Length: 149
Image (cartoon, rainbow, N blue to C red; front, side):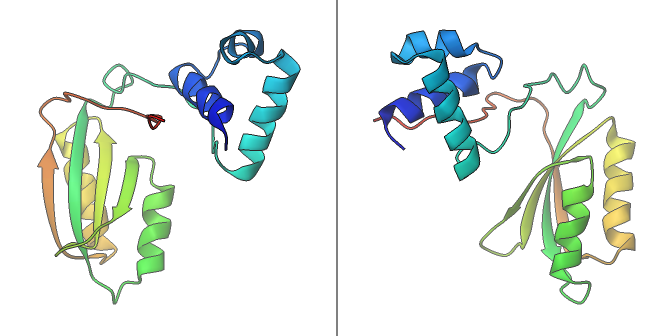
């Protein structure tokens, strides 16, 4: 990945709907050359998907919760990962160091949704223990942030 690829990725991170001509103008390439680079970046996995930066509260998902999970390994780690991968409320799942197994970021409509989500984890016997934190507000939230050269 060269400097131009990094610049293209940064421009797409700002606005994934930006035109090829606009990107080309910014990086000094033709639209077809930009398209070929984007195709290559996507094929290599450097760009995984094009997405929307949505207002979660406006979509009815006003509550953001962080759930530290101490996994009950008898339930199966692969089953846990499959469950959280498929669950629509799970925005992120990170395998972490320390006394916890995973950190989940979930977005739900209300506190009853948080309780139901935790109840589902318990019913499936994934939890040895957990700790949940509710975000009161979000000071900073970023998607991709390009590294400085």
